[in-house]
Structures are given as C-alpha cells and as structure tokens.
Image (cartoon, rainbow, N blue to C red; front, side, top):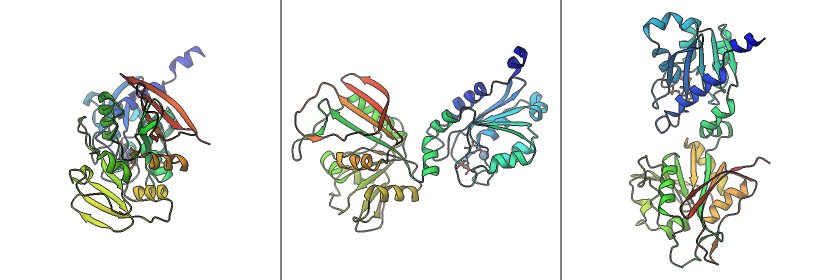
Length: 356
Ligand code: AOF
Ligand code: ZN
C-alpha cells in the first residue's frame, strides 16, 4: 500500500508546473488563453512548453518539440500534462490532438475543458477515441482562475468585468458637481491602476467622468499596451478636445445617434430605452472584447452592481482624506473581500461577486 502511494504519479505537481509555464504567456497571448504543458517519462520531465504568442504554436507543440533527441524514443511512453484541453480544430495552428495522437502518447492529463465552441469537449473525445487514457480536472479551479477572462467570455457570452474606483475615507468618489476635481488616490496607486489597465482588453467610462476628469485612460505610467477605450456618450455631447478623443488609442463611443468610423474613433449605436448594461455587454461580446475595467463614474459603476454584472471590484480608499459631502461612492452588495493591499496612505481592497 505504502509503495503504491509512493509510485502514484503526482499529477498536481506536474500540473502546477504547467500553470507556471502558462503564466509566461501573460500579456502576449490574449485573446487566446495562457496554456502550459509538460511531458513526463517515469517521473522525469523530458519536455516543457507554453503558448508564447497569439497566433503562434500552442503549448503542446512547444512542449513536444523541446524534447532532446536522445529522449525522443521515450515520447510514446510518456504522460503529457496540459493546463487546457488540447484543441481539435484548425485555427491559426493545426489541432494539438492530431500531434498527440501522431506521437502515440499513452496518457494525457488535463486541468479543464476548453470552453471555446470549436473545441469544448471535442479534443477530449478525440483523444479517448484513439485509445489514449485521458484524466481531467487536475487543478481545475486554479487553471480556470488563471484564464478567468477567457472562461467568462465563452461560458457567459460577455466580457469579464472589473469595477474600479477610488474613494475618500468617508466614502465619497468626488466633490459635488461643479466643484474642482479631487485627487483621491496617491501616485503609487495610480501606477498600479496603469498596470491593471495593461492587463485588460478595454476600459469603460461614462459621460460625466470623461468630462469632469478628462482622463487619458492610457498606461503611460506602466510599460504595457493601452487597452481599447470605451466611452459612453449617448447624446454625443462630449467636446472633441477631451484626451479620450486624441486618437492615440482605438476608442469606441457608445451613443444613440450614429455609427461609423473616423480614424481611431468608432461610433457604436445603442438604444436609450433598453437596459444599458446589457446592451454594452452584448456589444462587447459581439466585438470579441474579453475583459473590461469600468473606471467610473459612480452611476455607471452602480448600474453594473445593481444588475449583478461584475466579477471583481478593486476599491482604493484614501484612509487620510475626508470631505464630508460630495458624490457618494458605489455600494457593493453580495461581495466577498479576497484581499487587501496598503500603498502609503491608500488601502486597496479586492472583492469578487458572491454567487446568489
Ligand atoms: C491548445 N493549446 O496552448 C492553446 C489553445 O487560432 P489558434 O489555432 O491559435 O487557436 C486558438 C484557440 O485554441 C483558442 O481560442 C483556444 O480555444 C485554444 N487554445 N489550445 O490546445 C494551447 N492556447
Ligand atoms: Zn492546440
């Protein structure tokens, strides 16, 4: 019995390695998922790979081609670990299942199924049909969390939604309308926000925020790409002189009046009479935008909260600033706090939505 336990392959150990490898693709593979793979012969890793760049080779391909010449005869007696179901379709690259079958690999251990319609179970079926022993569900939760944007997008047909705001210690987001702009978060938090922006596909703000704060919504404080800008301007009343219209970044303007493109500005028509949040989410799904960070204002954030349409909230509180009156910050309901971080005078709290 003891010996049997000792000889059991440590699936979680190798899957953990797959997840570590997968993370090396962060920032270069979106909208594809981050995927890692290892090939193990009798408790020895003989190959490792990950999906490195969008449009290029998948994790399994890089893993198998990393095997040294002297180890190649061992491939057909090895176990392949992969953090996502191997694909069974011809996309930008050929199916990984064909490669695995061609190499006569005897066992494949998978963390989670691929929710992408073209794959979604077909990869697992194809491997099984060719006689390969397939084990699924190893570190499934961790693997899904790593690619949570990709999973939400394909399973719920909407982007992954992060709500972000800064508030005073007495729970205000800004001074009252017409009053001078209030800077709440400190420089360290502002830099962190730019890092967050670089991790998402898009940032959304409402009309009042675009006008009052004149934000650039770029990542100028962080070395990462600026996401798509999404501006809600139903009546197209925002002045073209605002930073968000400077055309340095592709910008979609959701409005009720017009469609079309002008350089980097894309006009997208929505209707005032229908549910705004649902229309936005539908549009973002159609546009294949996998994630959105909603950065204000209070009303727009509250609409997402009221609809229960959010996945994470990141709230920056300046613990030293009180203004006594102003525009109230949104109220979180059904939220779990998952973390907390202190950055000088600011405290950042992280929440996820609690399923009802
Ligand atoms: C895998 N291994 O490492 C990744 C997979 O256009 P393509 O050919 O790059 O295919 C993209 C789709 O393949 C993507 O939507 C997802 O379903 C899957 N990604 N599959 O077997 C990998 N990155
Ligand atoms: Zn593949």
